Structures are given as structure tokens and as C-alpha cells.
Length: 44
Image (tube, rainbow, N blue to C red):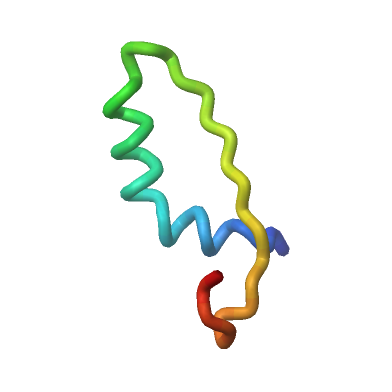
């Protein structure tokens, strides 16, 4: 599978799942806005 976001999700999964579980009793829906950026450029 050639999913450009899979590595990002795997890398961030501990944070994603912790945040989701923190609010699980409210049945959250998570919308993630992931945008590609060149890792050699500084964060904006």
C-alpha cells in the first residue's frame, strides 16, 4: 500500500489514541488535517 500518511499516523498514534481515549465517553469523531511539508524546511 502506498499511503503517504500512514507513516505519519503510525508515528503519532500514541498521541492520537491518548487524546481519543481521554474523551471516549463523548464518542468523539476525529478529523485530522495532515499536510505534506518538506522535512528540511523549518516549521512555520
